[in-house]
Length: 472
Image (cartoon, rainbow, N blue to C red; front, side, top):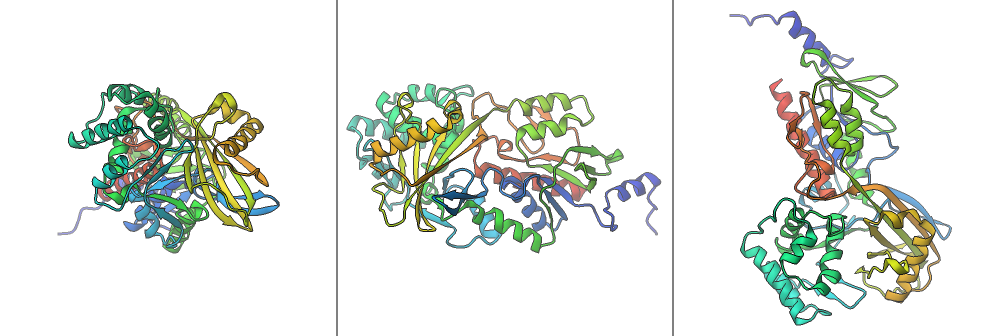
C-alpha cells in the first residue's frame, strides 16, 4: 500500500522551511554570547543545521576579549573582569568540548583574603570538612564570628539548604540568621555583591542560598577559583566559533536581527537583518532582555505586548573594571585575589582586586566595581579613588597607566520580584509562537546573571528546539 500524498498545504509548509538550496532551513541563533554559543554547539551536536548571527564584530557578548593599550603596549584582556568557579560545570564542559587549551584557565583552591586582614582558605579535605576547617582556621575573625558562620552554613547543610521565603532579601535573611553586624559588613555583603551583583538590601535571598549550596555546600572542587590566563576569549568564544565553523555551522557576525517574521501555518520563520530575510526552521533569541523585548513586541498574538513588557522590565546593573599596569620587574605586594574595603565617602569604590599576571613586559591587575551605578558615571574620579584605595589598603605603588572599562548593562539586577524567564515562557506567560525560544543569562531563573546561567539557558533552549523539530 502506498503512502497517501501530502496535501497542498503540507507541501507549501515543507517548502517554506527549506533554504535556497532545497535543504532544511537552519535553526537561527540570534546572539553570539555565551548562551548563543552554547545553544549553537548543542544544536550541531544533535545534527541540526545552525546559523549563528550577532551584530557585534566578535563573539563573546559581555565576556569577550578586548585589546587594551596600557603604557603604550597592547595587551589582551576582557571587556570586564570575571571570576569563574568549579561549580560552573556546564561552562567548563562546553569549553572542553570546543577545544579550550588546557592552560587557558588558572585553577586554585578557594581562598578569600581581604585588605582588612580577613583570610579564609579551604584545605584539601573532603567536603564538608574543607569548609568547616577553613572557617575554624579563618584569620581576622573573632570566635563569635566564626561560630556564627559555622552555625549558619552548617545549619543550612543539615536542613538541605532550604530556600527562604520568595520575597526575602539577603539583608533580611542575614538578620534572621542572627549574623553579627561586623561579619555581615566584612564577609556576607561583599560575597553577596560578588555572587549576585546586587546590593544585599535588594538582592534575592533564595538565589543567594542556591549559589551558596552549589559552591560552599558542594564537593570541594566546586568552590575552586578559576581565572583566565589571558582572556576569556580563549576559554570559550574563539574556540567555539572555530568549532562551529569546522562542523558546518554558518557564523554571521556584524549581522543584526531587526525583526522576526512567523511564516503561516507553522512553516518556520524569517529573520529580518535589514539586508534581507534569513529563512529559519526555528529561532533562539540568545540576546539581552531589552533586545528580546524589541523582537517579540512585533509578533502576532494578544500576549506579545505583555511578554515584551516583562522582558523590558528586567533591570540591569553596571559593572566597572579598572585595569592597571606596572613594570613587569616590579613585584606587587598583594594576593592574587583580594576583597577590598569599600568606603564610597572617600572614593574607595573598589570591591575586588585581581592579579592578572604579565603581558608585554607589564604586570597587570584589575579592580572590579559591581552594582555601583553612580560611581560608574564619574570615570576620572572613580579611577583616582581606586588608585588611592590600592595604595592605602594594599600598599601598591602608583601604576604606569590605567584603563577603565564600564559595561552599563553588564548583568541582571537579582531581586526577589524579577521576572522569571525560561526557554518557553516569561513568568506564567507561555510563548505562543511555535519555533521560538529564549536564552541568555536571564533565561535560567534559578541563578543570578552569570556565565554559567547563560550556558545552561543556551543548552536548555537547544534541547527544546531539537525536541520541537523532531516532532515537526
